[in-house]
Length: 274
Image (cartoon, rainbow, N blue to C red; front, top):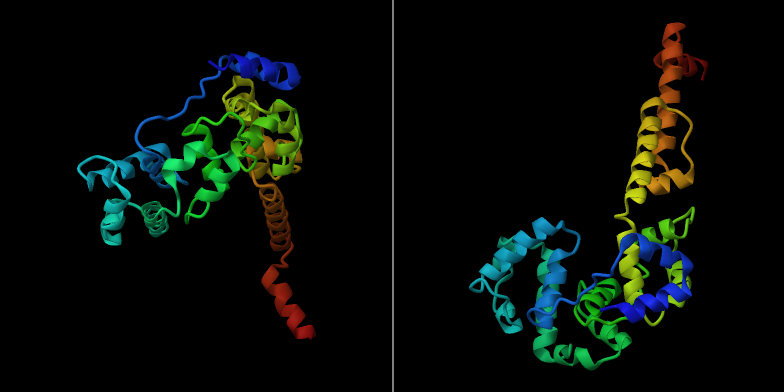
């Protein structure tokens, strides 16, 4: 299915060619069921939630309409309280209603999206509250099956590039765009492979080992791990430093108590001196 894209990516990027060999055939497919409106509602519901939790909420949402996806007009006729009752946050209720309003009014020409260039689709969708460039790019990739989408803001793509290319630091969006230039016109396929990099056994084991090192530091107050180790583990850079400072502070207080000079006494003495 993706043979021309794979052949191109192998020729233009040696590192990606190795990833393709490790991961295997590309399984990127568009989600063809339902309408574009349904797909965008689905995307809003799933934002910042686990798949299980979002699926439950989506099921309850569709239950308001006879266990089927609603039309924009039906959403607009539903009170905010009813939508909130199925587990949607206030922000997501506002986003879904704004989407329904703009689709119903024609401000977002949802039936014309298939014929629009990628940039025009993004410009049209980001008018909707709660839909940013990343969400619009996911719509292009997984709904419209556009072949040359590079989601530079996506953390999974950034982490995949970091591991695939052996980078010490997480690449910035500009780095992603620079590296991804060679992937055109099949950046969507390459991005899918960057997501799959994180599922490779060697990457999982490396990240697990790095997390163990960070946990050891937090428990023992040992020297702070390198930035590379923290990036692999996904740990905040300051955590180990804070833990080390706390352990040193505790050691000083313990030594002071043993010598009969507690922090409280020192404070009183300083007050007398002043």
